[in-house]
Length: 129
View 1 (spheres, rainbow, N blue to C red):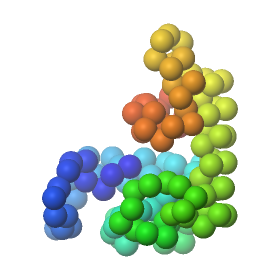
View 2 (cartoon, helix red, strand yellow):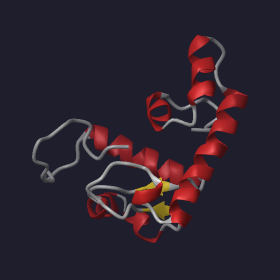
View 3 (cartoon, helix red, strand yellow):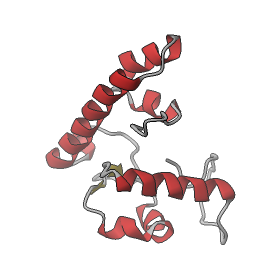
View 4 (cartoon, rainbow, N blue to C red):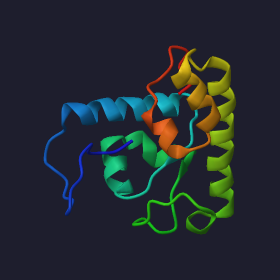
């Protein structure tokens, strides 16, 4: 989830909340309600202001290097990387069970371990995503 859904060469917080941001905050809260692992990278402090519940949420993981967007062994503690990996494996099993029929759903099931594929899929009716 991105705080702002657009690219910026020099990021600064804006003094108001965009409608798309409100939806992003809703999706994060929804993920928290099902105990999802939340990875906070860049601007983690801003996310914690926007969604105050993140400050005390036990399933938040942060990288060693906030400026790096890589999800890798080198950028997370071993414990946090394993939490992320386990969450993705659990998600992949769920996605395979309830992937929509058709070519898109089959592709999702085969590539569900990838972060990019997960980000492009809209939530299923069952709420697994």
